[in-house]
Image 1 (tube, helix red, strand yellow):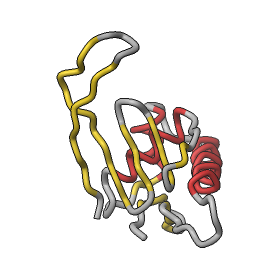
Image 2 (image 1 turned 45 degrees about the vertical axis):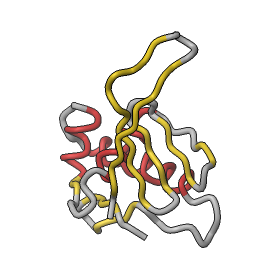
Image 3 (image 1 turned 60 degrees about the vertical axis):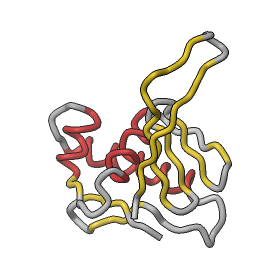
Length: 123
């Protein structure tokens, strides 16, 4: 089950206190901070593109929902769905899976739903 924890944070770099808590999502060894756009797997920072991050957050925040290619395109790209869009989504998800799987025994967090789209899967 995905858990969301809120914690306060201060920033010495800008010498100001942030009043609103950070939105953190944890699932096993996977950690995401929305405001910092930070992704960690087993405490190791994973560098994601903007689209990879947005796809991962969309799926993680809705773990039981299957997202169609059309819906992912609408919510992440904010564009009309086309044939090339499906290919773009597939490429981003493929890259995202590779980045999240540091070891062969690591879980596959993103599952394909054949012919429909993708969903988040808890290990």
